[in-house]
Length: 161
Image 1 (cartoon, rainbow, N blue to C red):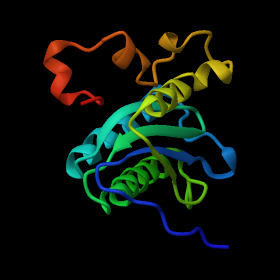
Image 2 (image 1 turned 135 degrees about the horizontal axis):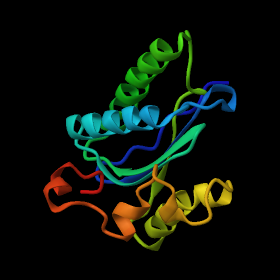
Image 3 (image 1 turned 180 degrees about the vertical axis):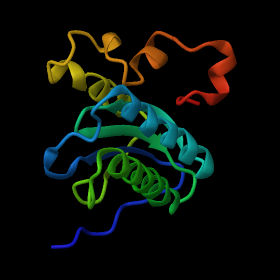
């Protein structure tokens, strides 16, 4: 059964999720995580998406972002996932789908729920027993957002704008 239409609101925040096909890993080494994050940077600029938080797990991704235009969310995710799939398949000699269906997105109200959502995704590595504390996991926004671990000259290129 096909998925129904997305609820898209200009200026709204979304919790965006996408999982590897058959729950398989989509990141095998550090370079893979970095490649995905480079694509997030590129496409967030192109489609004017503000990223407030992220967590890249070995087999799935969580992003919290704000869109300015209704059509930008699908274009943003399509660009990232299509280009990352091409990178991954080329690097590992694979063909076909990397992702399990289309990405999921849920509207996040800009109140306490937004902070709860961000905390939830940044705690993912702790719940998965990959690390004991979120600041020790290098593939999330926790350090940047909570601890301010960003060099002043990198602020404009930061994920969290």
